[in-house]
Amino acid sequence: MVRVRLREDGPRQYRNRSGVSVDEDAPEVDVDPDQAAYLVEETGYFEFVETDPRLEGSTVTSETADDGGAGDDQQYQFDPDTWFDDHDGYTAREERVLSGDVDDHLETIAEIERSDNVLEAIDARRAALEE
Image (cartoon, rainbow, N blue to C red; front, side, top):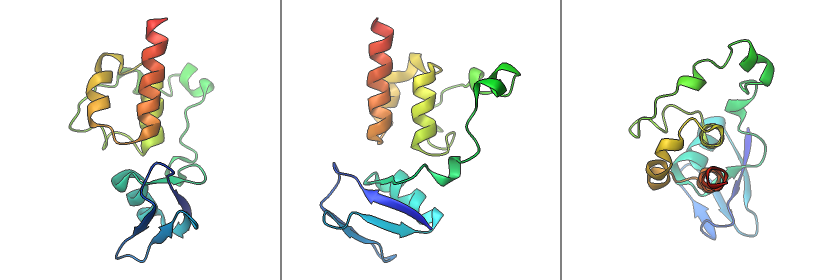
């Protein structure tokens, strides 16, 4: 089971046919990993309480980047039609934005993105580029 939390900037309560029922007084719920991914990615009303379990063990460290382990990441080709499919959760999209790989596409990403975390990363990246 994966614990997710109703975002503070989301609705005051959320209920669905799968039995998820949360409100501002009890904003956290344990759900299966697929349901958690749906709640976070598709509704945009939730966030993971812990790190997204799909990302565990997939973080690229500086060691793997130095030995070519992240070679594909450095040659990422942005396509707005596959932006969400190309990344395993909002954390991966946030990291992509902060990496500078998509600097030429920040405006397009801001138009299609639904994660506040990624939108904040876009703002941070824009600020860094202005310096």
